[in-house]
Structure formats: structure tokens, C-alpha cells
Length: 319
Image (cartoon, rainbow, N blue to C red; front, top):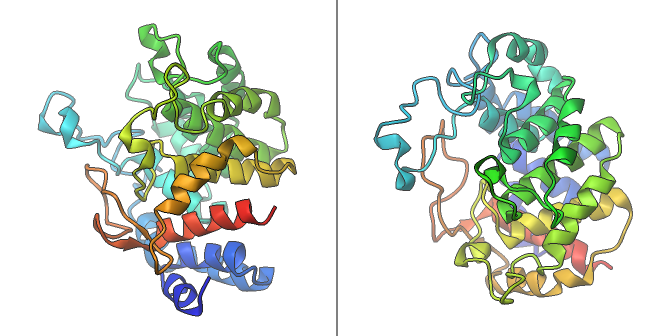
């Protein structure tokens, strides 16, 4: 990390700056915690907090905005989905490090007022989609809701390969990299927040990804698709090897185990995308409604991706 690159990363929203201080600069806790506390009152965090509805939701809906037309142009495959509803707002605030106390009472409000668009199911019980349930598991643990039943749900819906697939409800019996990664993120966050072990479940999903080097098809050894090497922030629900490597970094540190050597080629792919000035480039913006943009246009150096790539390589190279 050069001084120029460090200064560039620090000259950012508190939601990013505190993580740079903690994970790249290894500042004392009192330094990064002071920056983290500003997420509730400044920048992206404060802006998104101010958009919460009186009933505890955002945009009047759980996963989709209340005004979303499932038959209209916005529902077309190439239109992208909206990113303004409750699930996505909570995901961002949690990932930005907002203290849950800033959302005091939200868990109760969502229990009373928020229902999933699928079958009108209650919010903290989850629904049938693995990714949605992974987010709900993490967000519930963060806000203090009882989401323990979702851990059992994931145990019941784990595929024979060890991963998960949101399309199980349509009959799929093969795991999906997207669904598996989003499930793993939820299980790991839940374990970190509650100290209730999900390690046995996580191991199956981790092995599914590691056996494929984070990006290969087991049948051919070729990349699952070109998008595994296209990095974009926010990650949303989309899989790529940087997003996956971030999970394995967090799991490694939490479990006290070294990086798995089967990730070596994926790490090489991440390293190859680093620019001569130390940055990573935004590949795209995922289409769909947002409250406001939090990163640069496609083709520009991204502070978020640069932080993420630098953090992963720092972890990998430190062993």
C-alpha cells in the first residue's frame, strides 16, 4: 500500500474509511471505531437511515419495493431488479458497519409489518429463496431477531454436492455458486454474531466452491461463466471470485485456519486485475433502481473494489 493509494482510500465515506483503517492500516481500535461511529450520522449510512419508512421497511416492501410491477417493464430480465427495498437496505447498512442500536425497534417493526412477496410469509421466518434467507439470517442476527429456525432450514435444503440452489423449489438438485456463497455469508455472520456454530453446514458449501477452485465447472474445468472474473461493487447477490475470496478470508480468520491452497489460481486471477497504480476497475453497475450510487461508473477505478482486492491479497500473502 503506497501512501498515495492509502490517502485515496481514506478520502472516502466513513462506511469505507473505517474498514481501511482497521483491515489495511491496522490502526488501534479507538481510531477505526471512532470512524465507524460516524456511519450513523454522515454519508451513505445516514442517507439510507433517513429513508426508512415508519413501519420499519424501506420502499414499502421486503425484497421488492411496494410499488414493483411484476408484470411491467421493470420486471424484464435485462432491466435488473430494484435495490431499494428492506432486504437491500439492511444488507448495505450491516456491511457498512452501522451499529444495530441505530435501528433500535426495527426488528419488532418488521416482525409486525413486513411480509415476503412470496406467499405473504412473515419477515423473520424467511421464504423459499436461499439467497433471501441467507440475508435474513444475517440481518436478523444483527438486529437481535430470532432467526434460529433458518439454520435448520439451510440444513434441510443443502444439496448432495454440499452447496445450495435457490431453484430447488423448481426441482433443481445441483448447487449454484450464487446461492451457495450468499448462504455461506449468512451462516458465517450468524455464527459470528450469536456464537452458535454453523461450521458443519458451512464446510459442505465451502468444499463445493473449493473443489472447483472458486470458478471452474467440475465437469470441464472451464470457468462457470465470464462473470466470475467481472468485479462490481456493490456485490449484491452476484457471484465472482473476489466476492468468494472475501468470504474465505473472513471464514479463515474466524475459524483460525490458513487459506486453502485450492484458491491459488482464483487469487492469481484477482491479482491480475490489479492496475499498475494498485487499483481495481469497476466492471459494471448492476442495473436496477437504487436510492443513490455508492461507487463509480464502469471503467473507473473503484475505491471499494481496491479495498476489497487489497484486503484479500494482504490476507493471502501474509501466510
